[in-house]
Amino acid sequence: GHYPTSRPNLALAGGCALNIKWNSKLRASGLFGEVWAPPFPNDSGAAIGAAACAMFAEGGHTRLDWDVYSGPRLTASAAPPEGWRATPCDEARLAHLLATEGEPVVFLAGRAEIGPRALGGRSTLATATD
Image 1 (cartoon, helix red, strand yellow):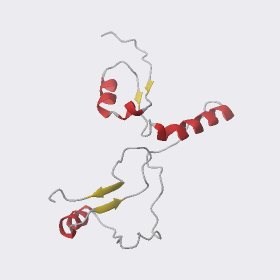
Image 2 (cartoon, rainbow, N blue to C red):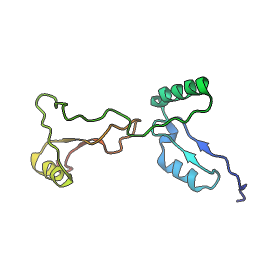
Image 3 (cartoon, rainbow, N blue to C red):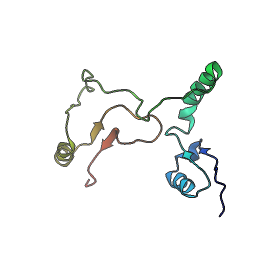
Image 4 (cartoon, helix red, strand yellow):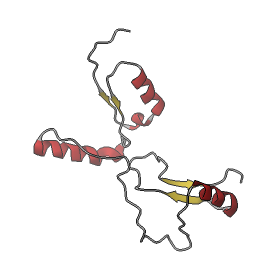
C-alpha cells in the first residue's frame, strides 16, 4: 500500500499489548513510524502512568527515564530463606546443579524486572526429565 512519508507513532497499552506476535506484525506493517509496547502495559503499569501524568502536570512535557530492570537489586548481605542455599554460579554450574540435585533451582541475577513478563533475571528452573 501507499503510506505517507511522515507516519504516526503508536504506543500500545492494555493486556493485548503483551502479545509479541501482534506487536511484531504491527512494527513490520509499515503503518507506523515507531511502535512501542512497554513491559508493563496491563494494570501493573497504572502507577507509572499516574507518575507520568503528575510529572506532566507539574512541569510540562517530561521525559520518564526507566528501565525494564528497575525492580529490587540483589544484595550480598541478603540471606536466603531457612532451608535454602545461595551459591553464586555460572551457566555450567547451574546446569550441573539442575542435573545432579534433583530439585528445582531458583535463579536470580541483577535487578528484578518490572511488568508481568519474566525476562530471565528471576526464574525457577527444573529438569524436564521428571
